[in-house]
Image (tube, rainbow, N blue to C red; front, side, top):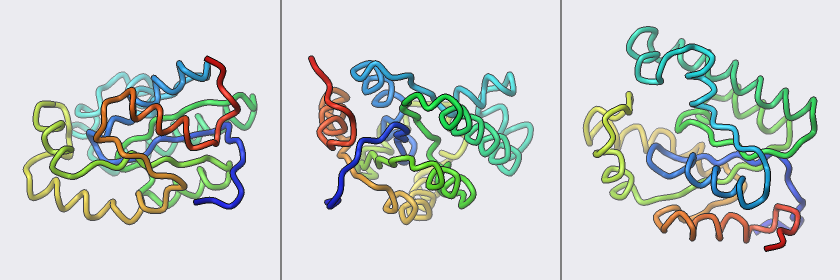
Length: 181
C-alpha cells in the first residue's frame, strides 16, 4: 500500500482487452461528476475509422502513432485546464514507453483492472471487433507480453467482479476527493 495517498485528478484505467476499462471509467466518472475520456473513442473520432479499420488499413505501427498523439492531446487538455478526468486507455497503451512517460510526467494515477486470463478470453470471444484477438495462443502470448507493464500501475483492482463492485473498489482506493452520496 502507498504510504502517502494523495488525491489524484488524472486517473487512468489500464488493463488487458476485456477487463472493463471503458465501462468502469464511465461509471466512476458519473459517480464523481468528472468527465470520462475514452482513448479508443478519441482515436476513432480523430481518424473517422473504427479501431479494427485502422489496424486493417494502416497497421499497428500507425495505430500506435495515432494513439500516442491522442493521448498527448488528452494529457495536454488536462494540463491546460486542470480539470479532473477519468481516462480509459487501450489495452496496449502503457506498453508503449513514450505513453508511459507522458502519463508519469503528468502525475496520472494508473489503476490496473486485473482479471484472470480465462475470464478475459470468455469476455473477448463474444466480441468480433478486437483486432489483436486472433486465437487463444496469440491472446495468451500478448497478455504475457503486456503483464509487466500492467504490474507497474499504482493500484490494482479485481475486475472479474460485477461493474458496480469494480467501481466500489476504485472509489475505495482513497485517491479521490470525498464523494457524498
